[in-house]
Length: 215
Ligand SMILES: [Zn+2]
Image (cartoon, rainbow, N blue to C red):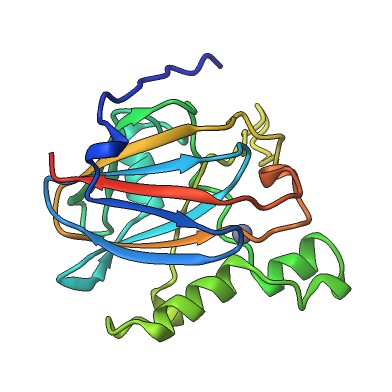
């Protein structure tokens, strides 16, 4: 499949938010309606597990099912409207120099590490642990029940003709990014995936950079 790449002309020097999220760490923040949010895959092949909520009512959150059905495609890229489970648009992807992002693979957890790899991987740090740590430190009243379907930015999970999910080598590279416009005030919850057992981040978790602009 040919990826359509769409760069952005926003200048990082003019960004009002510019932070590094270290490998394996969570990040949480609010992006105001109409503002732009960019995630940069600094070294390439990093998976960035992400959840979105309406910042004023966190019971409204990103829905993979509604997003896929609405656009009739399983991959996310420029033009994708990221829908909530109530059918309203939380964000729109406006630029993408990677070309494809996954929303089927889910976030890694102690349980999935055990099932996919081995019992002795159970203790290994997972995205679910990072999400739980971040929400326990925040004041949004989020609990583990609020950890629903997520996006894996930069992760390559192609679906084969007979419907199999494959965790494949990344198609991202150093400094590739995805940028989106918030259509409401959005709470962003990121786990910069600490996974060491699959090729989604080349077995080597690396930092990412998050930026935002008011316009
Ligand atoms: Zn993960």
